[in-house]
Image (cartoon, rainbow, N blue to C red):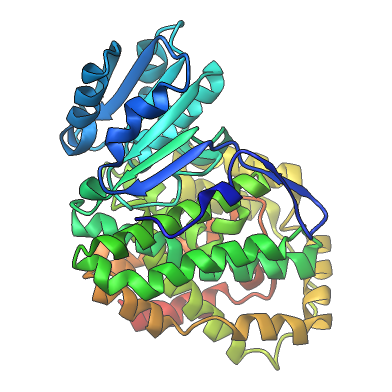
Length: 445
């Protein structure tokens, strides 16, 4: 049922107009009804001998038992690895469990699930130098085709190099039955690309960061699929679900081409990651990644709208004073036990230094015509909120129990999770964090 010719993207080198050669190691993608039934056929083209199937309690019910059945009918023996946690977190404990359960002679891991299972299996298989397949259970995030694994290590959300799945199965009979909030989360994850593409283009102008127009176009295609099919997907229309899944996979391929998450993760993701870390530190239920990203997108676009209101008032910052020791205390308060990694990053990059702020704001103001033109291409925040509403998804942070204090801290400090220029760094550079965060809190809380 997929409308995409996946062969044009997969398992080959692509000489791009940007001057680089892009590669994607994925061999096959199946987004169609009864895709799981193709598993034995795909395996027959290889010589795998020792298989492991990894599920959690929910994904085993959603698709795991079907995977077991197909493998058994085809005569394959395999080890079942089952996470028992009610809410699985991709942290050290989950990683250690998987490393200890996968035998040394395993040559293929078959992951059954969505974001967390996928991230864990991708990373462990990469470190063990073995292949893995993913059988998706919901169109809930764009990591199916990604080559990075976001993990929680020492309380800090950290992205690690990995390798994409060799084969992706998106069985429409399975993923169309996913809970509606998971389908909406996938839409939220893709809508975030509006912000990350804007951030990426500004980073190219201000910092000279590499950018690829063709990959940006690939990401725009993924956004369009969600915008056009969101409402129908919420009604479990299989063609619309297929389009959402296609958009998620295309976004992941874009990350694989670049070799990092830049084409698919910007300020909206950084705020989402900060909220996630705070939920976990408080031992509170953590909403789905895409749910948080969708809300972060509405908030980030609203902040960009506020920035546009200041366009005639922004001038290069010459007298900036970065009180490093005070900032370190603020980071320790904002991140708690996760602060160490954030402080190390600033020591390494010096991105908040007087010299860097002065340089960036000078370039920003010099190139302001280009910059405002890019920002003007963003949809308005209300449009994104309406798409989320149409899928019965939350669109404000308070709806998922992000407190106003955590929300404000995210605007101030989520930028320090990564050395990646974007909206939140701009607010810091021009001294707009306090004003904009207060205005936004008054609007949405």
